[in-house]
Amino acid sequence: QVQLVESGGGLVQPGGSLRLSCAASGIIFSIYSMGWYRQAPGKQREWVARITSSGTTNYADSVKGRFTISRDNAKNTLYLQMNSLKPEDTAVYYCNARKDDGTGLIYWGQGTQVTVSS
Image (cartoon, rainbow, N blue to C red; front, side):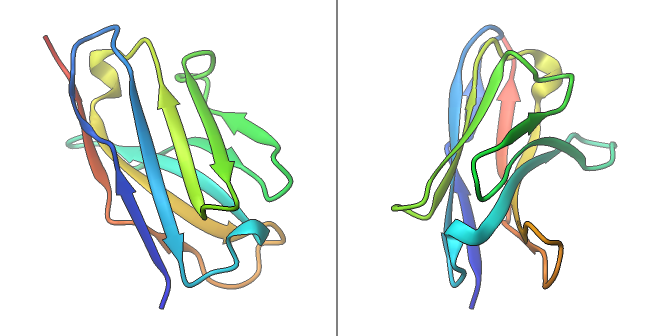
């Protein structure tokens, strides 16, 4: 059974930082491309960042230079370091796993709430 479990969300002031984690089980983590998505109230889910199995990273323009995605294959864990947070970063953040070649199923976590407010 595949599980992706996000943690690390919370309430932070504008300009602050948070680090999200996504612990994976039930998959061979090292061969999966991993991503972060977010969904704000009343909006569609949007892509935030992705890291391939080989470590190549990509970011949405809205977070480039502020967020850093990383992975620890030994711990089967994905991270998202979020700095210089803005109120518009407020959303539920989800992690996502899919194979680099696009085959097979896509897996999602249950999400973790991030609220940026003073």
